[in-house]
Image 1: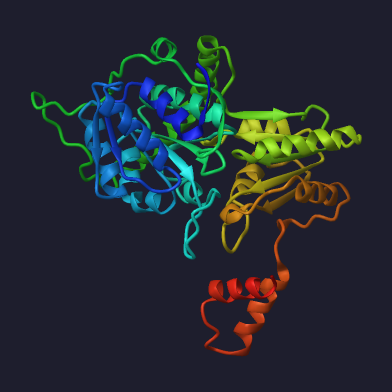
Image 2: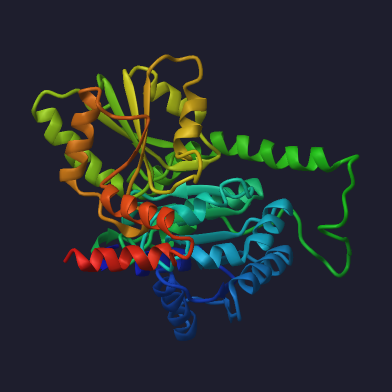
Length: 413
């Protein structure tokens, strides 16, 4: 159904159409509107049978999901930022047990200092937790990825994160084709768990595994992620046959066929990058863009097939690996092993800083002219940083850097 709605509400309605039987919820911005809408649907009777559980923390939310999923219920939760970190121990338990839980992460920066705005620091910190990670380019894809996530999770017996940019998508109102119940029912079969706790046939799960089998258990998790590389595009194609539109898959190339420079991104910034690509193409610049939807498992072959024809690659990162620079770019380099081309990492949009077309034009012009360094911080205020470094060198008790720089910013206004 095409409607003008908020991204969070579209996701909630899409999740509801997947008929979850247990939802464990603890609110944290910018995820809150998703679980609020789901609670309304449960309370009104629109979503039933479903047990909606208000828990006392994010750790409790994932623990509840583990128990419910192990008991054979289709299970869902959502979180963001510090909430995701609070449930980390349980995240590894969910994936290690092979439980098909689906979770929306409304991407938000990690403190300190406190920041509620969007970047990818939270999910990037859990990239190796054993969960499939799918990144939405827009709210239409965010809504569409949830039926696909349940399908993938239950087919592979693996948990799936659907990652959507906090505020940028969660709180944006736009025209969205929200999945309808009949379509989701035709696409997503009733849940048939691969493993279930049954009082009539008791077993232990998550028991101690020693050195004699632990490597094999961990390898199995990797093997199932490799199976997902085949399942993700197949499920996306089946989704297209039922819903009549293309969402999901491994990657989305844009104007890459003859591109000398290709910009690699995850998430909603893809739309802005494509606008700049169009404007530069109008000037005769051979540039393209590649959105990676499946970050885990990482689609090495698909990325290599698109980028291998380019002369240089610019990876736009929404998170920072402190001490080295890029996270996505490290995976891209693995995909391009043995191919000689210029590679650049650009850290941008941390803590919700806008990534503007003006800044991207300047960035891409520098790349085309050979002026771009291997690691660049887009729109970095070097004067502000240098002032704090000088303050720290001058006195031992220089004070908290974040507050110092906030005062410096205020003094410049």
